[in-house]
Image (cartoon, rainbow, N blue to C red; front, top):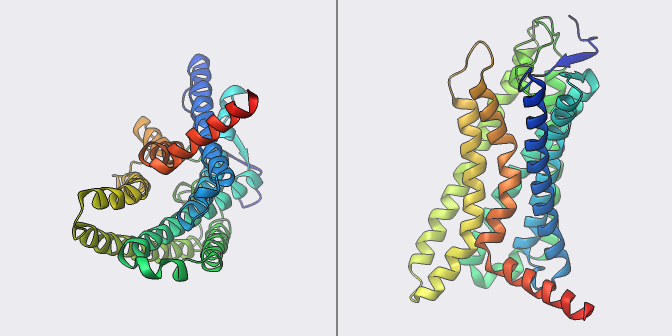
Length: 309
């Protein structure tokens, strides 16, 4: 096979029609839950002026990314199950790789920026308004989005510059770079491996920055004299810390687990865990652990009921 191939074959969850329908229904429920949760976060933050702060500005960006990332993989998998197909076009695979890498890269950049936001808010509160002003927040968010685009263009270009001659079967339910590189038969794939190593160094640096930020945050919080003050400070950090942990540890589990020569049920479960669960769980984490969002939901609900009456 050459690079002129018209399609790839994705990994199916089952060859049994009833199980394919079950897969469609489960993914539909997950997808709708993720859409509703993230749209709810966006709507609440936009409508409630009390939440027009840097932290919630970045949270809206994070919700938009979650909406995009889950929309890149799930709908195609659902459609394939419904029509009993495994095929994805070459162009569709390129688009899927580009947007998935773009959104994941932007996601991690935003999580790093949000750690910096919490560090300034807790460790340097007197400088918070000057450091995290509207212009700075927009510039940081824009840099995350632009960096994600460049990052995705680099990896997508390197991946699809190779010649695929080891078949067209991708051992994953979506187009994923490591699985595509298994099909490569030219030395050009070494460029993408080098890019992946460089990316891993950047990710480790960002993760180190997040860890150092939270070490400083916890040291500052523990010195707060009042228990109520400590609890309030911790409550603003725990949702973000939980989301970062979910993002990092699902990725580590997916990519550092022992590799196998052929796909297995465990591979599919792990793939679903790291690609589907975080976008679905992030709104739950922020809404359940954040008193301001819950208070805003109550205000908006009461206000709407008041208008109706």
